[in-house]
Amino acid sequence: MRMKSEFVFEVALVCLTVFAIGCSQGSGEIRGEEDAVLTSPPNVPPPIKRNYNTKLKVHLEVVEKTSPISEGVDYTFWTFGGSVPGSFIRVREGDLVEFRLSNHPNNKMPHNIDLHAVTGPGGGAASSMTAPGHTSTFSFKVINPGLYVYHCATAPVGMHIANGMYGLILVEPKEGMPRVDREYYVMQGDFYTKGPYGQRGHQPFEMEKALKEQPDYVLFNGSVGAMTGDKSLTAKLGENVRLYVGNGGPNLISSFHVIGEIFDKVFIEGGSSINHNVQTTLVPAGGSAIVDFKVEVPGTLVIVDHSIFRTFNKGSLGLIKVEGSENKIIYSGKTSDSVYLAEGGAVQSVGEAVKVPVAKTKQEQMNFGKQKYESVCAACHQVGGEGIPNAFPPLAKSDYLNADKKRAIRTVLHGLQGVITVNGKQFNSVMPKLDLTDEEVANILTYVYGSWSNAGYSVTAQEVKDARSEKPPEISPEH
Image (cartoon, rainbow, N blue to C red):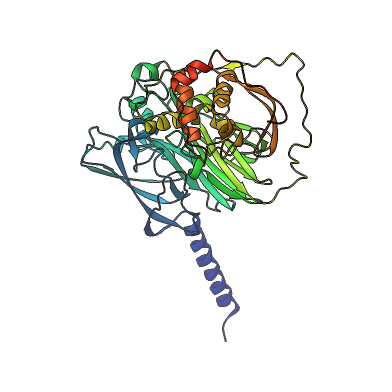
């Protein structure tokens, strides 16, 4: 017969064993190893499902490559993983990360990496200086959950960052992130080119503008239109959306805002503090934020830097297209329409003309026109010419445009206000006079007429010049 003291001892031994195992797991015991899943923007690796820490192997390649920064404009980017921003990295708090940084043999510059998630000299930069054709390896344990920026820290540091060398690393807390339906990766950066915004051809980096903090481009995900058209982000009505937002800089602070939404939660500066019901959140250069929101009405949400000239004149614009049935309770749409001209309604002039090369062929006109259209007209009439219901008329399959080419030219030259009918629907908004050159007007209209099942007319600079002395188009309900 067992003595009572022996039974008590065995129970205590079992309890101590269980406690020891729990302490071992809680202290971050490393179990096994696996390769990290890396993704290019706007994609995000899947959430981490394991409930233990592992040795996570990350292999990131630096690639210097020339690609479009805008339509007809090339730039030589320096990239982590071949994209701007660089590959998204997702790890778990307590993981041991084995990091391999490879510098492609065809590159011209040495590079390294500073990960803000690393506790150690230079965030890893001191251990990762890598010449072309070489690979550097170092390891670190991630001990702080949050969303962190990484970037190149090779001198001149600002130049390496300005050329696109930044990205995000998410350190999930041990308990995991709250689940959402969709996750996207959005990162802002400012770019400094020798030529002004939109000047065609290859544009090199311009150090003088960078020192003065006067960027020609302020972009989401490395190029004008990176999240518009068929590259727009998508969601369905009722889904919860999470944006992992970063700002590579190198100079500007982002006033991050989504037009048509309110952030239900903002993980402030990518950390553990959460703010609620936020309209716009500041994201510092070299910083981040996580924003969550539920989409409750269908339509197109517009992602902007609310330092708003950057959006409409320097490229920081993206779209989220939400599919689903209308919810008239939350948003009715326009319920009435009337004319109000309290001060006489003078048409306002906006912008200044930027000279463009003279197109030699219709295809060149189309190319130049598309570029100018997307920077000047797309905010109202949309990238695909569909317009905005009850606000701005469609240009796609437009009976108003196709019926009278001369009237269309005068509309662009002189602006338009009052009631017009387009494709059977009435619109009563104001189109401002646009200070564009004859070439630019001709190119835009040739592009519009050659797109979206329109009439295919060509418009010449001489036709535009001749129309400048003519009266603005007359407006009547019949039109």
